[in-house]
Every structure is written in structure tokens, then in C-alpha cells.
Length: 519
Image 1 (cartoon, one colour):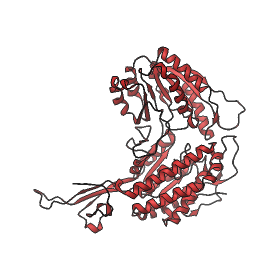
Image 2 (cartoon, rainbow, N blue to C red; image 1 turned 120 degrees about the vertical axis):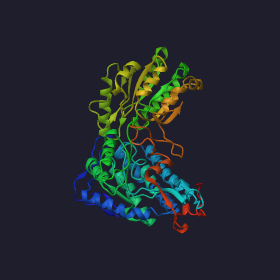
Image 3 (cartoon, rainbow, N blue to C red; image 1 turned 30 degrees about the vertical axis):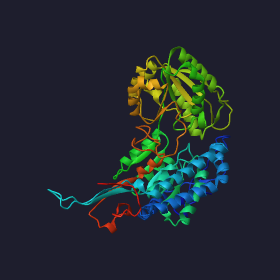
Image 4 (cartoon, rainbow, N blue to C red; image 1 turned 90 degrees about the vertical axis):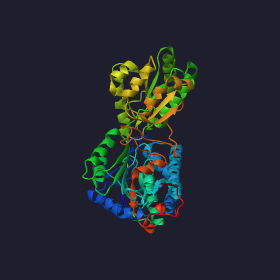
């Protein structure tokens, strides 16, 4: 029997249990995981609250030491991760190893960030005691940690958006304790990483409340976490329904807290008239790879493609269907996602004006959570009449929407919801001809791409993985890249303090050598 990690202790192993299911064959895996009680959720939050003021005072090098040691520890268990994660998710070994590398890379990226220290945005306005008509006080400000953060593991990234993924890494880098809610589909993977986290915390002499890992039902444990007064922020990656529920809970608290939820995006692609028929083969091959990558279970999966009608459109649809026919069904991460994908395809294909160009037929007696590609088409006129065509279908499907005039795309953009990405394919001249098109598109997405496909999110300083609602609950944030740390801090101003009582980043001699804005 496996139980939750409450700081450096284990939860009650006699509680109600659950088991993971192998999506490749539908078989229940043998390990049992005990669900936490309300009292155990409270204990995890209490420990985090106790640790918060201690961790908040850790300097950059100490946080960097922990983050690098954690990355090394995760690298060291990849041999155990491969069979565990593959059994729970159906993901092949290269994906497990690749996601391990991304997870460890994120940790080391934040280690480098906090080690240099300039991310705190130190600002100094020195006193002017002789200023008329009133003297000016000495004012110094910087970013400080917000407090304990609740992190919800994502189903589609069992490592990079889970226990020690980007949300946790950025929270620890900011100086915040983390209470993680494990995803029910891959508890063994979560526990394996969680044990590495605990061992690393002990090794680096961090307080035990810096981390807890909780198993349990999403509704009960998730609600208890978000409503707990000791939690000061939430990181979430998942469905719109789940993210919105947490957002509403957080805003209904006596003390509302920020929820940074990455939720829903169809990641539209706009093919402009300048892209001629000679590029159709190359484009459809790239689109097929992007739309079916990971069985379409990437949050940047392109779900809708707007393309010119007429002869170009006919050739494009035909070529894309042929490409998609070469893609076999593969297991999705768990049965819940598979069922939602089937419902989404049924709903979309039922809309007036939508044609099913191709749909992979899964055998009725197939075992596991298998799903295959689907290609649908519609005209822009029918698309504009039915807003449900804009709903995300999470899986390897594509809706192809034909238009007659590029001006129609401005109407599409005006009615489109917020997106993580928006992509433009065409020639350089198209950008000149349709300049206002980009200006409108900028208001709808967090990342704009030109002649590149949106799947594959580079982890770096400049990347933005966020966007206007419902892509996220806060369009000013990103959950990937160094900017993710800004979600879990707040500005604090120090007025009139003696130099020795200021944070080192704000002291007159700048002992840490950080970049500062000085007035």
C-alpha cells in the first residue's frame, strides 16, 4: 500500500484506495494508493505554512543548489521511470526519457536564474531630503515570494507539468513551499519523483514543509487545497471545467488568491493566399505530424486550420486526408481523455455544415484507450454561425475551414476565444498585405508563429506559454520559461530602512551584483 508524502512523513495507508490503469491494454495495475483525508490535507498545508518564512529567506545560491541536486536525482532514476511511466501512460521510452530531460532542464534553468539574482527586479529611488516643497523618502522595492503554492499535476505531461515540473520548479525558485496534488492516472510516477524530492530536500537541509504530495479524488482534495487559508496561489494545467472550478473556488474565499490555470486552446492556423499549391505537400506533412504528436494530447495541438477555398482548398484537403490515413490508432493517456475525445468528435461532426472527411475506425473489441485521427471540414460561413465549432477537441483531430477572402479572417479572429498559440503560413508579402490581420491576432494569443507549427514549446527566457482566457485564467502569465517565476511573487517596497536591514539585493553597496533600476 502506497500513501501520500506529508512533508517527511507518510500519510495513513489504511484509507480508501485507488489503482492506475494501463491505457495500452486496459489492465488495472497492482499498486494501491491511499487517498488523503481532510486532516492530512490540513497537515500538509500547515507544514507548508511553517516552512514559508524560512524558505523565503534562502539566498539564490542555496535555492540553486537544491534545484540542481533535484535535477541530478531525477536523472538518476530514469531507469525506474521508464517502466513505471510507460505502464501508467502508454508513452514510449523515448518520450519518457525526453520528458525527463525537459523536466531536469527546467530545474537547472531556474537554478541559473536565481543564482544570478537579477530576476527580482530591484528598484531604488534614493532619498532627497532637501527636495521642495516636500522631501523625498528613500524607497526600494523588489519581488518577494507569495507563500505556499498548490500545484495540480497534468495528465498529459506526467513529468514536465507534474510533481517537479515547471509549476513546482518556479515556485521553489521563487522561495515558496509546494503542495502537489498527484494525478490519478500516474500515481506511481508521481510517487517516484516525490521520493526524489524528499530525499533532495533532506540532503540540502530544507524544512520538510517545502513539499508534500497528496493522493486523492480531484474534487475533494483539490477543493480542500484551494480553500485552505494557508495556500496563497495555485498552478494548474488541465481542462477548462477543472481550471474554472478551481478559479471560482479561489475567488470565493474570504481571502481570494490567484489561480494560474492553463486550460483550453484550439491553436488556430491561418493559411494566407500567398502560400501556393507548391507548398501543399510539405505543409500537410508538417500539419499531420503536429496534429498527431503524442496522439494529439499536447496543449498546443493545432485543432483548426483556415485555408483558401477553391482548387487550392480541394487539393489541400485531399492531401491532408491521405497523410492522416497513414496514422494508426494509439493509446491515449487514460480512458477519461479517450472518452472526451470521442464525445468531442461526435459533437463537432453533428454541427450544421461540418463534413467528416476521414475518421479512423477503432475495432469494437479493442483493449485499452486507443484513438485514431479525424479530419473534418466546414466553410467559414457555417463556422461563424456556430460558436461550438470553436470548442477544443483534445486529441488527433483537425477541423479544416475554407474561406473566400482574407478579410473574412478578421471576423473569425474577432469572435475567437483566447489561445495559447496562433500560427500564420504564407509568404513575407502576406504580412505586408495583411498587416492589420497580425495586429488583431496579437490580442488573441500568447505566442504567434510564422511558417512553423505550434507543437514543441521551447523552454527558455523568451517563450510565452499562456494567453487570454480561456487559454489561461491570467493572460499576463506563462507556465513555461523563466517568466513562470513571476506568478509566485509579489512586489514589496521598503521605505526608510537602515541599509543593514534591507535585503542584500537592495543594499547600497549591491553586494550580490544584481542588475538594478536606480533613480
